[in-house]
Image (tube, rainbow, N blue to C red; front, side, top):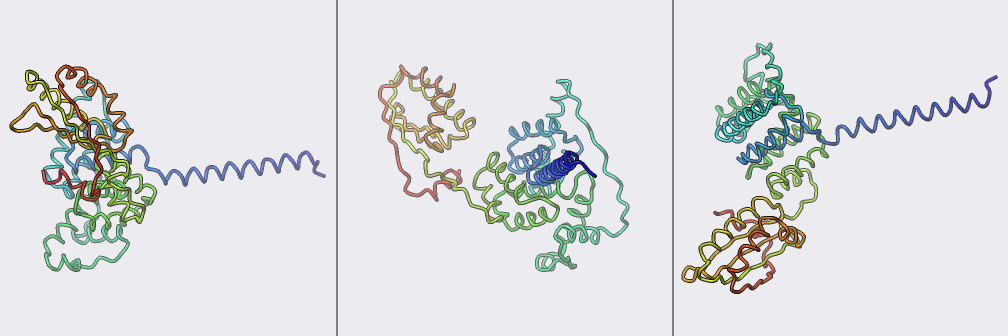
Length: 354
């Protein structure tokens, strides 16, 4: 007969085992609901290459290497991007990567080169091979030629199947899922390509990218590109759109009169401060200084901040403090006019035509 104490021990063991397995199962599920650090780097590198932001691309290329992406993987990302953002952006990205690698080499950092692409074993003609790969990604039959654009322009259909999907996607340096992350990120960073972005989001989901991960892609696009572009992903996913112009936006016009003997010096200091504020501070939307043509002592500054917190943060920055202390003796009068916008929707178009 089994003693009650022994029975209790077995029950306790059984409960603990179930609990541990449940936690493990939950962990395995959670693993696929978040982008890992390498996936985040793929998103950032792709989006910044597509947008042409080479300074921030340098930072993210370093981050990607530190996260464990090898040299051949990043090279393949940059090569693939030419098909979505053109040769100039791709070549600029590759040149930037070469510079990053050289800088790291000088610092004594040795980065893993990675494997070479495996030779192709499929002897099927390239169009057919590309058609099958696209069929796998879309999970829908792909007829020859593609309806619509393929019938109208057969050469573009051939380039799409034979080069993009056969030559590039069939290269095993990146998985299909990684390649879709590259493509989605590049398209999300580019204006006017929502139909293609929608198609590749569908293909990405077919490769195992989750909706939660795509929401993270949107958050990274918002951080590195813009909220407007991030919303293109959110709209396709039927997720809430985040207003580009927040309700708490702060708009101000500063009217300043400068003593005549300090005009040139003041102009130079103000120009430097305004430039630093826009480049460095995420919450500074615009600081646009001007002076009257006939009276250069009369300064007007249009200032736009994401919210009052961003404005208060701006006041504490070293560049603003330098501006404030060095120009104090130069200012004859200062008037601050807080404004309300009449049309928030059009506000995002303000500087586009420049």
